[in-house]
Image (cartoon, rainbow, N blue to C red):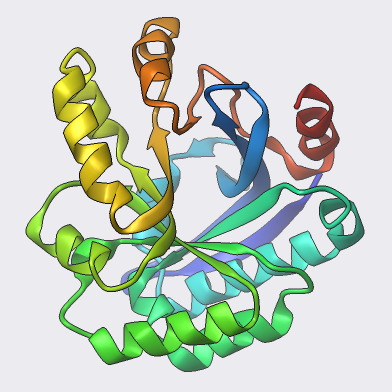
Length: 244
């Protein structure tokens, strides 16, 4: 099991936690084959209690979060021969404020032993750093990495960032699907809009057979508990490849 004990620092306190790196598949809804795997992190206290990951990561200081991102890449590097033997893409999440840090992205590029997909998260924090964004994009592209837009919603800031580049993938946030699952025209209109700025689309948060059936008509990639929960890295990869 790929687990790391960390002392995570926030502005107000020190938190001891155990992090387990997991993989969750992104599925081609037309064929139900695995297209990519997203690396996620399961968080537990040292007493074994599960900690919700979003507030945990939102409270980390910059040094702690950057260290965890580098630990994720190190864990992937340890199994690089396995990952590169297939056509599956592996994605990791990097918040926008670190994505536009050219020095840190240089560290990411230098560490990674095979091409990754970088999911840019927390896009709502964008404050007009166009040049920094393009510089990091150019660096990643020159080294064979993909760039994905995570948790897209049709908001002014999201749309501004959407239009900065042609994305390899845009992941439409699950909250949009929950609100509009029975409004096929609304979903189709958003897919058409986003498609203009990307190569592929993932619909996130598919959790029921009803959602799966309603979304099949759009022919995109999908992700969610209906297809698979995240599994520990050491056991998940071969399983997903065999299922594909």
